[in-house]
Image 1: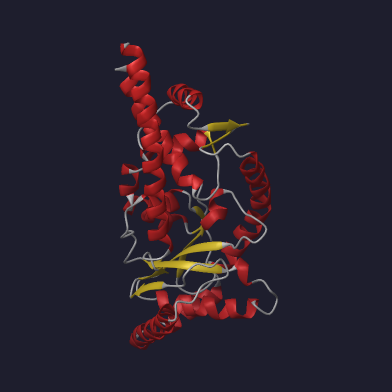
Image 2 (image 1 turned 30 degrees about the vertical axis):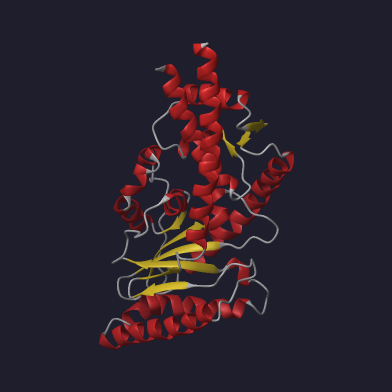
Length: 319
């Protein structure tokens, strides 16, 4: 029974390390506990880690664990964490500014920065929740402002790449990728709406049970500006419904052309946007699908090694 228990814990540890290996990111014991697919205390986790380390399936450098015995990865993480600490201050300041745009109800920091990592070329990514039926007006205003940031070379600070409105709080794609992105979101503005969002996506606890214990009381509220309130009143009519639909159609056509031409971003990733009345997000057929496929391949490779080690140990015990 004890061997079966450690086998199950070992599989769970490998799942976490396999996923973060795709981003060359070693993790701490506490992070492992957060991303575990079952409830586990720190003592049990420490024992399971020791067994995997003795089997040379995982490696430890300082406080970090990885499936790769590469010291450069650990140095990279430490430097990335330090740079993220600086960049996060900027991100929170920008979040308060973005919250002042009409119809914005919540702003979160997302992407690698939300996981406390940033390399020298890191963008500041944002997840935005808007008023029901006004997503495209809000997004267009925000992206018109972003156009001006290119003049000062600050466009990488305003990567507003995921929008939903109050009608679409539940994330459609329910998998390891979306679950990981969700539990690492850093809420910046819009406390009440973010609590609604997290409560609407309690499915994430099926992937990460410890997430159910997260305390959202620390999410700060933000005040609306007078200009924001006036602009929202201006667009509170039937004409604004038509404008919002029109802006959605225009954006959809423009991004369809980019997809057809198979354009790539500066990181070499295929550009694509999934759009509808109540959401605007990166096309899951591209990056998300690619990561999940690589994750499953890496996990299968590790599980085979783990099974082989378990079979050898069982044979030695029986003999």
